Image 1 (tube, rainbow, N blue to C red):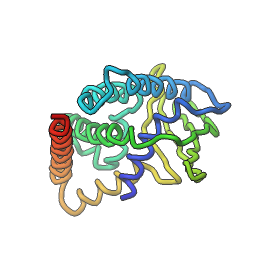
Image 2 (image 1 turned 90 degrees about the horizontal axis):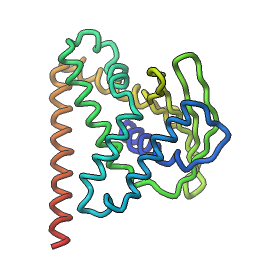
Image 3 (image 1 turned 135 degrees about the vertical axis):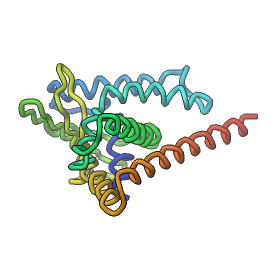
Length: 216
């Protein structure tokens, strides 16, 4: 699915930006770089390495991811016009479920990428909105353009969308969510998100047990 590709590739490739070169180093880029350097430091921490430290490692990365992404804004934009009809309680639940799924997708893909070269190609800032344009050079020489869209929150810049080769994470989720709500209901969307959450939790637990068994 295109959405999975956007989440898996785009969010995980945020890690690589810390090692990238380039002339663009404005506030949005600098803040992205700083947060991502913290992720790399956590992954390189000897105390967090190894199969038995997966949970601790992911917790550390997730904490840093919370400083990079504006989950509330991503959730609001992804739900589109259906956001207006939600109560405060429903909005809080949706942000929590959506944020958890994004985080799990991001964290689970982190260690799948390596060796790619990243270049900063541009940085555009207009008032409270910024776009940091990058280009991934894969091992076989393929160039993949990725734009990170950010909003200023006080003195911080937070990612609210990732665009890979013209494909927007937010737009894709909005299309999926709207289809489910239109053909069924908002309640069914929440039900599916909770089921996905349980599915991912089950997979994580299964992997943990498998690794524990192999070490015995």
